[in-house]
Image 1 (cartoon, rainbow, N blue to C red):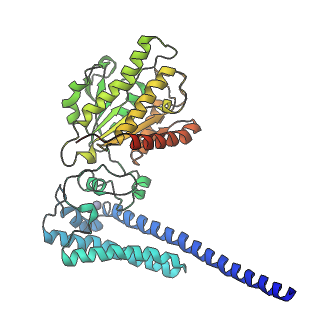
Image 2 (image 1 turned 180 degrees about the vertical axis):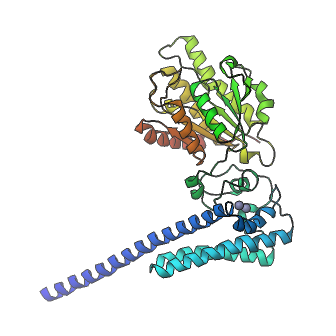
Image 3 (image 1 turned 60 degrees about the vertical axis):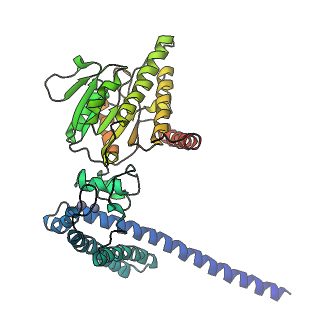
Length: 415
Ligand SMILES: [Zn+2]
Ligand SMILES: [Zn+2]
């Protein structure tokens, strides 16, 4: 009896050992497999970035750029097939070779997953080359761009910008990881960027930063006297309530930054309530609506953007109830409007910085502006810049739950 029990226990022990080894092997395969896919992505997109820096590489890669018209239809079948041969086939063959060498040197079975992944690119490119078919060329299918650029996944609109917005940005091919690292997920070069609240501390700092990134800035201000008159920037005065008069200006604008605001501090009079909502919430919404009517044309969704400074007051105390209430209302409305996907709408969730509205700010407006652009160029849609660690935890929770609630209980606008 004791002998049988001992045998059974040995049997269970052996089985557990086998199962433990199996689980271990599976884990190893998964981790190395994931690593090899990541490596494939990084190598391919880094090679692409190099093609735009190194002359002899660019010769072949330019065949890819020369094959498409602005609507992504192909220039000719010959140019398309040449681009497949000199770019896609060459690139994916190099990738297969490099990943195979790595998999041979490092004896981990999971690494072969990256080789298989790279082979699918080579297979697709070869089929396109030999058959002249474009069906598997997902990022280059012709036609108007109906969706906004995605955040983590490279869609047609995302990749279109590499061809026709700025060839020195948007290098990623499948996941936008490399662009996020290089800061090439949004190019500001040559873009016309209009900003409200231009005479304020952050407005001024953002203008300086935007100009350093070669953007053309249009300052929209209700205080034109406070801005320089040396002609270094275009100044357009506007009045609260007359937002629709800016339509002609906004038609030529790529990015609208809504940055104006009012802080009535401890007041709670009817006038204070009215002006807080009127300036911080409703004028911002009216500007958004006017700008959205200018997002027309087959490629407008690729380049037109709105950035709204909703401030950290969306989730954290600003020691000013009406500032918090009106900014939270604006933040929630932005979340609601983003559901329609009319164009990219970013939120700027900024902590206290020194300005006329907040003389006790901890950060400087210059530091905040620098960080805003650092994160925007990495395509962050919610740009959080604050010293308050709670905001980094609370904002994503609040944004995700509000987004979900609004998505379930509201309908898209009729187009
Ligand atoms: Zn392309
Ligand atoms: Zn390219």
